[in-house]
Image (tube, rainbow, N blue to C red; front, side, top):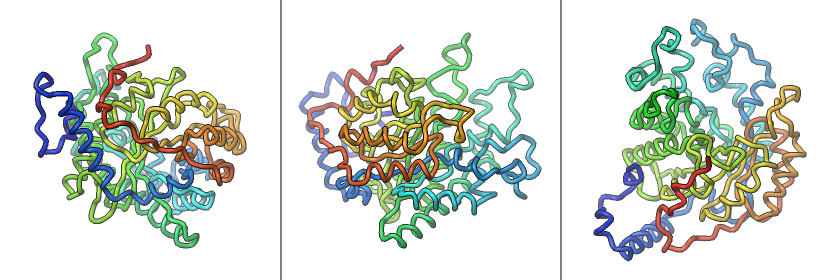
Length: 422
């Protein structure tokens, strides 16, 4: 099982019928003790005293700059055969000044955490723009197809460059604004959900078919994680999770990369730099993750063994529809809670493409804070620097949610891990 990848070598794993309940509880207490003894991440100290602000939507804000196909291609990609304008991660390579300006605006709006422009910066996701689709000629995408994507020299180099350069751009502006304001800012490496699913078959006649394997997804994420760390991130943010198995591949990749780079388990230090993990899911109207269909509690039980700095919800719904699911997650999780919803539902007639303006978002997120639900807040699709400025102002002085440690008697996975909503 994937969960076993987190087991340290010095603990013997016994079959279920040979493992006394007392042993499991003692093992859990030992692990909790280890985790608590690790030096806290600098962001944790901030979260004890106030609600931290995360930035808004890179894609929404990029569109306000009026970029064209020629702008995103630049010299490097001028001969690309497919349209690239929807591949916003490339702007980190072809329009770095614009991306830097966006980071500056979010930081000046009050963001404590800015995300790298790397939501789709894996070889798998980038192949959508640079590799011919076999389905156009009667074929299909399958593990054999992706075996050629993983390790492809062009795609590997491209994914590395996007991640490393974007992290460096974020790092530069976070440090510059942090120094000027005497307030530390943090860089989160954005790790998106991919364009493929490990939990779902695209073929209704072959429900057991998967286009890609777990190891292939893990390999793509590992390459992304290495480059983000090389660029200087403080945090690794696995976000907009609609498929929990994809997310587990990302989380296993993170642990393996941290281990191979000499990171100390469990505090995640890399070359004397602390790197923490944040996890954020996208949910549907019933509160379930989009494909794996887990409830908020089940989702938490599926990832809690990672001991993330935070867990939360983003994208998917507007803040008005997200409240009950955020409340459920807040009740169950014993780590910081993050939330950065879309600015309402899509509306092509609005200026940002979404219904809610800055003051609307500020009002809703202020309600989350008043309910004692959140430690980190910001915006996803449709949220501009103006939205983040309004949110930051509304949350200023409001106390953060109190993080209550759960009992050591609670096992890693409860029955609700397997609950789902149809």
